[in-house]
Length: 492
Image (tube, rainbow, N blue to C red):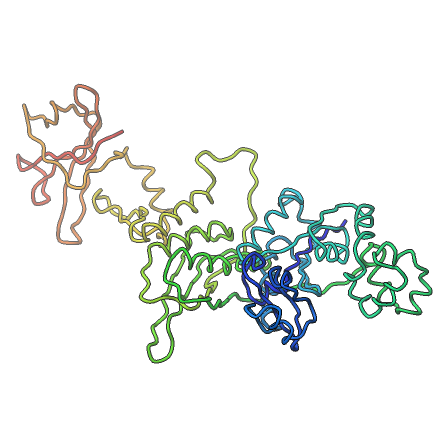
């Protein structure tokens, strides 16, 4: 069974793009020189919908006035729909600034309708907006409830009872006939339903009855679903020149929320994204500041991406205030399904470990987070080099097979071998050392003009602490007394 969430965005908020404007100052939006939206303080001063501009100036001379921008409203609604694609692929736009989500198949994934509504509200807040949410088993019914106020109903019978109490004015198909319906004493949808259908159809036409039937779940509904674009590149004009990382992060999270919806809709995971901070243009133009997030493993989690971006912005240096943000998904790949195991892995899953590495890279820099890359060389000091975790090390299959046949190696290898003294022809380190293994000859470096000939042993002292020592032959030649003992490593 379908279950719909209707997200109603106030027209005033879409025009001024500032949440909770009602709590601040008197604001009025004009369309064709008449009031189309207003805030609560403006309404308290006597302003009403449909009022002309001159009357508004008389009643509220200090009101903040705005001209309605249909293109901007459409852009914000589409941005909202794109962000909400992360909860269901079935998202559509409805009239009167409403976004509809068919979440019937998403309830189990997100933990039920209450948890899903909380997540939708969080995404709306990250877009810098506020909205009224309602739920219902029909799209038109949920749309009507959202325009009236916050109502959540999960059954058809309860939906019909709640719809019966709604005013007729909310039914857009009934607006041309509103005066006639009020003259009949028909104020609510329940009263409208009780009128003879044949007479209503002759007087008001078939569209009004069809919309009423769709709202009550008695007629099938057809929708045009929102589709995500093939690539992601979004630009956001900032309301002012901003040079503080915290404020930039608040605006960037709006783009990140849209990115999360795009990734979910396209079933993609992100490998690298690029954020451009545009600065002043014109004669004093400054090149944009570029922030690149390269991920150790493809990811799509919005919270994780926001955390990495916060660290990048905190570490970065801005040469000038930013006036716009541009977010681009540079490299993506098909999303790998999450593996559900019966028992959790000790120390967290592989994805948890990768996210930790990405956070360290964002906080410390890629050049300070390194990984081991073994080399095909028997000399311990040159058998490994350190690479950034963002680089791909060469294949280690052959080296792993060869390493499995080597004698044990110490956990701690000294950067510089420590010379050892001899006592009774035995090397001494905190006491005389006793050999505990046969000799292992390492002879290499001749191709570099620096031949090395060493005899390695595992040795222990009187307290049974084990060391890795070697005897170095001078000039690469074994024999005689031309040898020096060194300590090269300690076993755990």
